[in-house]
Image 1 (tube, helix red, strand yellow):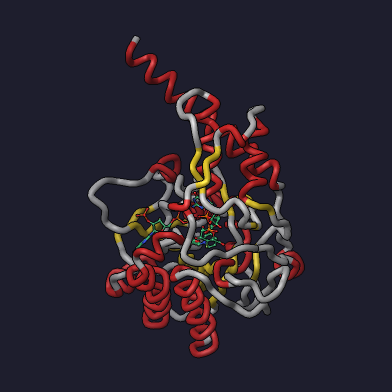
Image 2 (cartoon, rainbow, N blue to C red; image 1 turned 180 degrees about the vertical axis):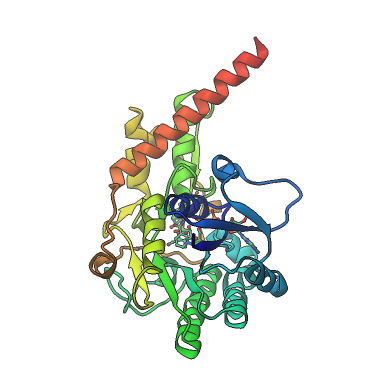
Length: 329
Ligand code: NAP
Ligand code: G4F
C-alpha cells in the first residue's frame, strides 16, 4: 500500500484529494496545523480512514519528523494562505506560508528521502497581468498580488529542486476550481451561498467587488485527479490545469440567480470594499498539455458547476432551517 502525505488536508482540495487517494488504495497521512478548535468539517466523513498528524509549514523540524516517521512515497503540498485579499493585508505571513513553506517541504524531502515524489499547488494567479491568451506552461508570469508573487517563488523553487537534486517534483498550475466545499470568502461560494439565502428569505442583498473580472472556473474533484496523475508519470513536469473557458463574475452571478428564477439586479450591490489594490482581469488556460500527457480533461461545465453549487447551498440552508424549527418545536 503506497503512503501519501497531504499538507492542507482540511482545505477544499485536500479533502477531495484524500478521497481520491483512499479510492486508489493509498494510506493517507494528513498534516494539520495546531488550532484551538478542530476544523475537520471537510474531512469528517473520511476521518477514520486517514491518519492526522500535526505539523506546520512554518516549522521545518515538524516536516522532517513527519517524513521520517511515515516514509511517504508521495507528498502533495496543498497548504497555503490561499486567499488573495489577505495576501495584501498580510504579505509577510503569506510569503512565509505560501513561498518559504514550499522550500521547507522540499528541503525536508531532500534530507529524508529524495526519492519522494512531490506535487506543488501552483496557481494561475502567477500569470496575473496576462502576457498571452490563453495562458499555457510557457506563458511569462506577471503576478499581481503578494499571493501570486509567493506562488511564483513556490513554482520556481520546485523547478529548482527538480533540476538541482533530481527530485521528482511537479508544479501544477491550476486555474480556479470550485465546489460546495469552497471557502465562503471566495467569490463563487459567496455568490451561491447568498443566492440560496436570498431565495429562502434569509438575506436581502449580496455585496460584491469587481464584476468584470474573468476567470476560468472548473470543478475541484476534476483538478485533484490531475494532481495525482502528475505524480504517476515516467518523468516530472509542470502542467496547466484549466477548462479553456472564461466567464466574468457577472456571468456567474446571472447564472446563479437565474437558476432560482430571480433577477440578480434586484439584489447585487457593488461595494468598493471588495476591490483589490491590483486586479487580475482575465484568466483562461490552455490545458492541452495535461490532455495530451496525462489524459486529463474536465468533466463539469461552467453552467453545471454554478448549478451544483447553488443546489448544494439551497439544500444545506433548508436542512439548517428544518433543524432550527425542530429545536424550537
Ligand atoms: P484552502 O481551502 O484555503 O486550504 C488551504 C489549506 O492549507 C488548509 O487546510 C489550511 O489549514 C492549510 N494551511 C494554511 N496554512 C498552513 C500552515 N502554515 N501549515 C499547515 N497547513 C496550513 O485552499 P484550496 O482551495 O484547497 O487550495 C489548495 C492549494 O491549491 C492552496 O495552496 C492554494 O493556494 C492552491 N490553489 C488553489 C486554487 C483554487 O482555485 N482552489 C487554484 C490554484 C492553486 P486550516 O484548515 O488550518 O486553515
Ligand atoms: O474567488 P476569488 O477570491 O479568487 P481568486 O482571487 O481568483 O483566487 C483563487 O484562485 C486562484 C487561482 O487563480 C488561487 F490560486 C487562489 O488561491 C484562489 O483560490 O476572486 C475571483 C474574482 C477576483 O477578480 C475578484 O476581484 O472575483 C472578484 N470578486 C468580485 N467581488 C470578488 C468579489 N472576489 C471575492 N473573493 N469577493 C468578492 O466580493
